Image (tube, rainbow, N blue to C red; front, side):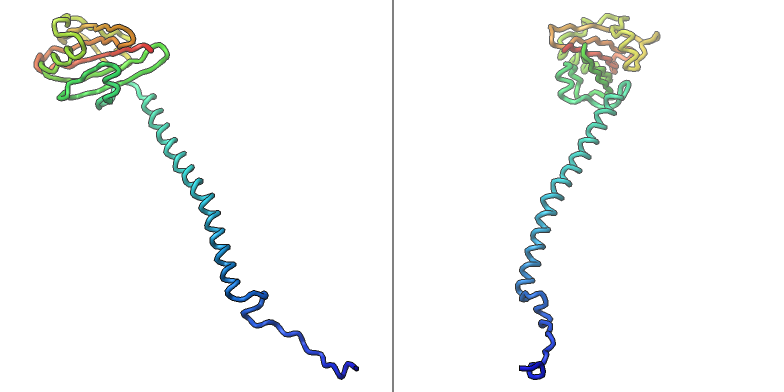
Length: 198
């Protein structure tokens, strides 16, 4: 047979829907599988990464808050937490006003400085709940030393009717140095330094 008897037929391309030799259903199935795989990879990597970023941000903010609290010097307005009041045994009367506090901690001792204004009955309740009483207050006596006065930013000068007492407890319970401004006996201002040793 000669070449003339066998005509050359040009190679035909496959129909458009079968270009890669796969049926349309097979291609859709492959695409769906790849999409599911990509979604799973994104979830496996993205979710933990997002969680780590959020967690790191919260931890950083918490650390900054604690650092700011530790760096603060002197009293700041507000009530110490219930736990702080319990640890340092400073039972501030519930209706006290102008409450301020400051806490310091080191390897030797922890101290909480508290100042508040109360009523005559409030003072009695505070002293009783601390474990002492009004009879223990010595007129003209300031029981808070210079070091603590400087830390808290207090000034116990002349022209004020001071009265003070020191209430000691058995370790590990804290001791309290209490000084009261009795200039207005119906509205005394109480200053307390409660010190606990670890």
